[in-house]
Amino acid sequence: MPVYALGDRVPQIDPTAFVHPDAVVIGDVRIGPESTVWPTAVLRGDHGTIVVGAQTSIQDGTVVHCTASLATTVGDRCVVGHNAHLEGCTVEDDCLIGSGSVVLHRAVVRRGALVGASALVPNDMEVPSRAMALGVPAKIREDAVAEGAFTAAAATYVHNGHWYRADLRRLD
Image 1 (cartoon, rainbow, N blue to C red):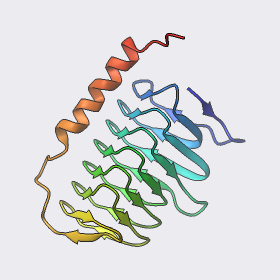
Image 2: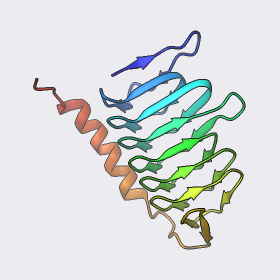
Image 3: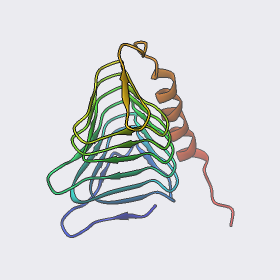
Image 4: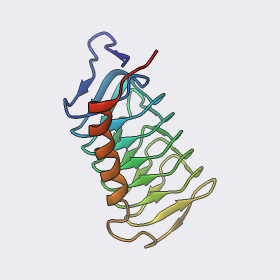
């Protein structure tokens, strides 16, 4: 897998995490236990810090970036869907970030919330716990997510990380 230091900014990847060989991790990026980073995802901690908690899935094609003044933090047991873009935001524990969605500067996605596929969570928006953020720009639907709604999805990616670590092999 392409993992790069940038000057004194060196990624810290927990030994139980799985980072696919076709993902890219650069700079001040911290990936927690049993988390997974899938093909063509890019986590670029060049000017700031990116933190991915435990048992979180960063799926194919996702871009996670930060700024010099805004870290990007993704909590524990989150599922970040394919082709999402997270930058300078906070995603708390147990969230689902839908495929193709964008979460921007200073936005906060609270515990157990969902950002719908292709939604845009603009600068400074807060998505309350157990709410859905849907549309462009996102509109909030309060109390729309059941407690534990994403537990099985997060567990599936933890399982897949262990499976891929054990059985993935390149054939060419």
